[in-house]
Image (cartoon, rainbow, N blue to C red; front, side, top):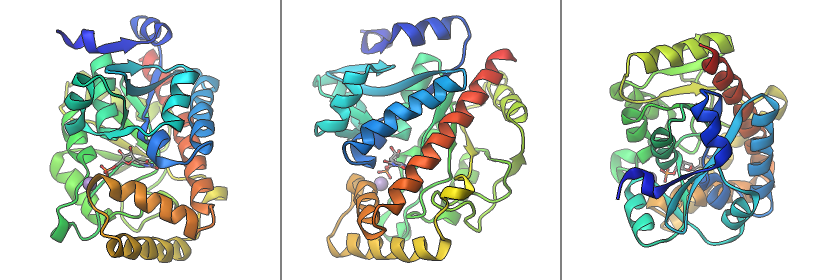
Length: 304
Ligand code: PSU
Ligand code: MN
């Protein structure tokens, strides 16, 4: 079998790609593990709508019954939003596909699949990164290795503040992954616009960002890039407040012995309850904002 035998690209996405039109990839772990039902469904549909409203075609990506699907129908999104689905990063892909199972793709797996389909721009909430205490636990998200190897531009609001942001930045630097701020000097802290850590470059226009993505692609550089887009100011959570809540969630994870792929979903769920849902409101707002910016970049890129 060839790669094409595993891939199923929706008609709309296929035609748009063939015509050189703008397509934005969306991940599905955020649906299965990032939010609860029905918020996960609502968020996935709203991301697609924001992408369309900005002139591009959304391609939500997942493995469904042993096929990599690029561009999902609403019933398929509903299925991911309501059933128990395997969180699928690079190391899970061959297992899930070969056994005819379904998997929700993380940033890493979504980048792999977008690249197979020829999609250059991807919107998400935040990427994985180096976890706090990684010096002991070795917990470093496979998202970072994927960014080092697979050429897709990932529009995100930084990496989640549950991570060690300075160490994540160091890792990205070693991996040769450019981190560009969209109109910001500071690497955003997901729920907050600033994290105290810097981006490599600040580009304040969509046209400028698209030109950088194009240069990266034209050179055939290995690896992707991060376009860091801060949460809109009106949805930002107070830095001191969220820092305190994150620390409480981390303590809880330690107490309960959570590790490995369960860590990120556990922390997001804990944060939801201890912030009385404030983290979820911010999370949705930043994902929508990233979807819009990614769509604009994809449109600009399709004209270059
Ligand atoms: N950001 C969110 N919600 C999420 C994730 C990121 O706002 O659910 C998911 C992404 O799919 C990301 C994954 O790739 O968490 C990282 O998990 P890990 O740290 O286990 O690699
Ligand atoms: Mn991990």
